[in-house]
Length: 238
Image 1 (cartoon, rainbow, N blue to C red):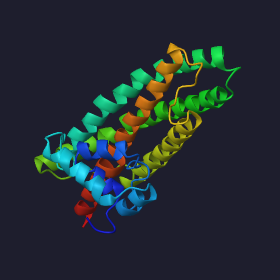
Image 2 (cartoon, one colour; image 1 turned 120 degrees about the vertical axis):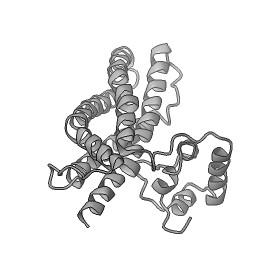
Image 3 (cartoon, helix red, strand yellow; image 1 turned 90 degrees about the horizontal axis):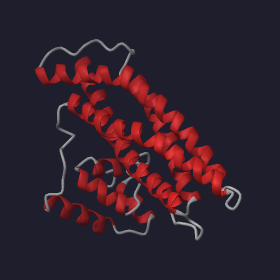
């Protein structure tokens, strides 16, 4: 750890670190470029206390696959089969809950109209985002990773530089992160209103679970997959 170590650096060590940062409310995802010490102190946390919690998680065997060293194509496959598939199932289900809650309770809580608007935009953007990744960027990263693993020459980059589509994906991640922040603010950190029915409870829980999964999903791309792909291209051209 140095004064320039970022939240993304810490999160990238293992999945247990991600869970600890999430528990302390530290934005390792879209805010991952923040220096770790500064981010902790801004939340009134001791950096040493947070690091000790991360070390305990690693030492108790709760760490997951080391995606920093796993073959690049395996990480890309993991993101698609785990996080993309989750979104394809969950986004439509949450839309139905949102529509029902808004239609039944919208008159008593004006927040719901804004929530429905934000969620509809988020879903549209995420579904287009997944399509672009699966059709354009990830098939190329799969080729890249397999060539690296086999010790073969890397395939030519069809985008000028692999950084070009990655920059687009990262901007879209920031937009998704902003939407998640606003949803959390509108729900007062997903605190159920007094009038909440079972559908409202299911919606709040689903949105919070979506936030958790998207944070990890974006972290794996922004902080591990994309930097590794860019570094591989740079090594090839040097």
